[in-house]
Each structure stands twice: as C-alpha cells, then as structure tokens.
Amino acid sequence: MIRVEKLHKTFGTGTRARPVLHDVDLNIAQGTVGAVVGPSGAGKSTLARCVNLLERPTSGRVWVAGTDVTDLPERDLRHARRAIGTVFQSANLLRRRTAAQNVAMPLRYLGVTAREEKRRVAELLERVGLTDRADDYPAQLSGGQRQRVGIARALALRPKVLLSDEATSGLDPAATRSVLALLRELRTDLDLAILLITHEMEVVREVADTAALLREGRVIESGPVHQLVADPHSALGNALLPDRPVSLDRQGLGTWRLTYQGRSVPTDWLTRLGADHGLDVHLLSATVEEIAGRAAGRATVAVGHDRADELTAALDGWGIHAEPLPPGHSGPAEEPAASEPAPEAAAETVEGAVV
Ligand SMILES: Nc1ncnc2c1ncn2[C@@H]1O[C@H](COP(=O)(O)OP(=O)(O)OP(=O)(O)O)[C@@H](O)[C@H]1O
Image (tube, rainbow, N blue to C red):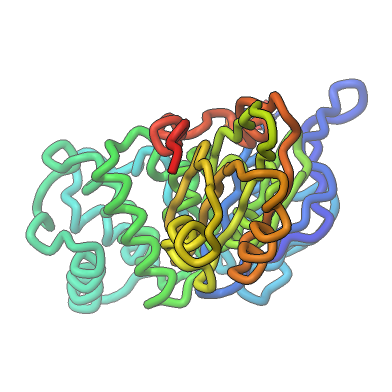
C-alpha cells in the first residue's frame, strides 16, 4: 500500500521558503489504482517524489508497502526503493540498448546471474506483450511500445507499488488505451498499489479506483471514483462525467438534474418512465459512461409540475438521485477539476433531445 499522512513539503528556507504540499493525506491499497489529478503546479510530481523517496517530506509520514520510509537513513533508501517501480512521461530508455537490455538494467545492478537475467527479461517482455520486440532499439518502437518497455523495467525488481507520472501524456488514444489496459492488468495480476499522476480525466475514468484532486498543494477532494461520479456536487465527479444541465423554461414544466451509477439502475429507465409510469419526459441532456466497471450517468429531464412526485418516486426506486434545477440554468454544473477538461466532453453530451 501507499499511505501518506499529513504530508508537508516546503522547498527552500527563510525568506525563500516555498510551501508546495500542505497536510496531504492519501491511501492506496494493494490491488488498486489511485489517481492524483490537478492543475499544473498543484504539487502532483512533488507528492510522487516524496513517495518514491527522491524528496524528503518537511513533515508528515509516508509508508510504502508497509514500511514507514519517512526517516529511513540514506543507506537504507536504496533497498526501500526496490519496492517502488516508477514509470515516467517519456519512458527514459537508453537509446543504444535494446528493449531487452533496457529491461535488464535494474537486474544488472542487483548482480543476478546471466541465466536468471535472461529468464526474467523474457518473462517481463512477455508480461507487457513485447516478446517479439526484444532486440529492437527504442527508436524502432512506437511511443506506446517504449512505454511498455519502461513498465517492464519498472517491474524488474518485483515492486509492491508502481508510480506512474503522466505515463500516457503525449501518446495517441490507441497507445494510451493499451498502456492503461496493461496497468489495469498489472494491478490485478500482481496485486500492485498504483499511484497514477495525471491531468487527463479520460485516464482516471479508464483505470482509477480512487481519485484525489490536488489544488495549490492541498487535497480538495478524494474518494472512490464510483462514489465521486454519483455525487452531483463533487467537482471531481463533474470533471469525470461532465454534463451541461439546461433547464427548460416552459410554463408548467419543472427541470430535474439526475445523477446515477451502479447496477440497480436499468439502462432503459427513460423508456420505463413513459411506458410504466405514463410520464411525459423531456430529455434535455445526458451523459453515460462506464466508470470503475459500472454504468454512470448524468441527465437533465423536464416533466409537468403536477407529476414531479411520481417522477422522483420512480427514480428513487432505481437509485437515481434527482435534484430540481432552477429555471434559466444553462452550462456546466461546476468548474472543471483539472487543468484540461476532456475534449470529448462536449461530444458525449446529448442536448435538446425530447422524448
Ligand atoms: N526542487 C524544487 N525547488 C523549488 N520549487 C520546486 C521544486 N520542485 C517543484 N517546485 C515547485 O513546486 C510546485 C509544484 O510543482 P510540481 O512539479 O509538483 O507540480 P505538478 O502538479 O506536478 O505540475 P505539472 O502538472 O506542471 O507537472 C511548483 O510551483 C514548482 O515550481
């Protein structure tokens, strides 16, 4: 596990002191992916560097795989770092070494036998699906393949936790998906605790179990992803599942903003409102995604004021949260949580459809 408690980090001293992290708490269990998101300069990389022991916290504590690493003496750091694999934005491979030689580097430092090294490198390359590219040099590999080699190298010493710092930034969508699928697989198969630093909400949606929003060095919000998207007032939830609630300004109609996630919600809830409950429902906007393995959705609907109780009762029965929206409301629910809202957000929102 990765556990951070009341972490403070200040760079410099005296008049040049620059506090970067304040009172940060974080908990990532084995077999889970915990994402940390936030705008540029929020302190994400500094947090990662405090976890992989490249920076010492000013105060607070850090545990990695059950060991309190906060005050480890210098001589013990090297050993402690073996439990931590790190993958960076650019895979940082050595240009003049093949994929296999790059993966073998950490094993070399450890002094394993040539036979053991060969066996382990073959196993690692197979793990990341690159057995047939073992003898290729980095320049002969695609960005996604280079990142896979970087992941294989990070796994060489059988770490308990993996740090991924913007590992998919700059990759095209297909390569991003394949790297994220690999991270998901590793999380489960190797029971890793993965700390995922990212500014891409798409990445969080695809792979994270929990998420924390860091802003100006403080955790503004955190929790399991499926709970965040079910909370209509969560900034992170709104960034993960962006919608544009709009209210219908028409006599006799009231507008409702709906939020839901989970298996109890039938996918044909809208049809059923008409067919089973005889409700005349206007669908004004809707966004539906699979997040953390469950369907999650946000929608705005309008119904006659005289049928509002029937609407909320039916929705409540399925576990759909409904809140009235004031007349004249239009636009995003909240400000986006990260520096770059998902560009596909607008495309995912269906507006103006009336059933
Ligand atoms: N070694 C350092 N000395 C002084 N200030 C630093 C140092 N490292 C980082 N900072 C400052 O700490 C703040 C947070 O930086 P950090 O790199 O952790 O942010 P980030 O959220 O990862 O940003 P980005 O998404 O742009 O990478 C920044 O203002 C940065 O200038």
